[in-house]
Image (cartoon, rainbow, N blue to C red; front, side):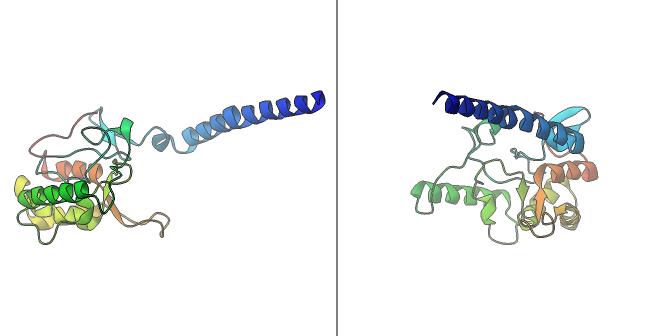
Length: 200
């Protein structure tokens, strides 16, 4: 019995060291060596000031910027320390009510938008921090952005097209647009929007 206990303790200790120390340190070192920017959060800086991350959505309210998906993460949304969904299902009256209110708001803010509000602009992602939109959802906002910035709609749509990211490895996921990167591109191309990008 004692010899079996010694073997079990030794195996537990070796496993703990391998999986709890060696493996995490090795993966961290490899990530820092091969992908340092991604390993450190894909932070985006402008003029030495951190304004966000390519991986974490944030709120944009100015009419001159692309607005991302709604967020249920934290009390005010977009809280990276409280990532999560609303957990409201399709039969939820609360969800239907919230979507109706959000649809009315989006239509009033985008009166010249060409079609119905894209579903992704009405529903939060599972994390509440999705940094991407579909190209169609970004283009849907082009008329509002163009009017706020005093430029042609075609110019905004062309910039959206320039920032479409393809499927990962050519077959995973869907084409998408990173909202923060696109908003930075809008500022570079047309000057600062009616309000500046937030700092983090």
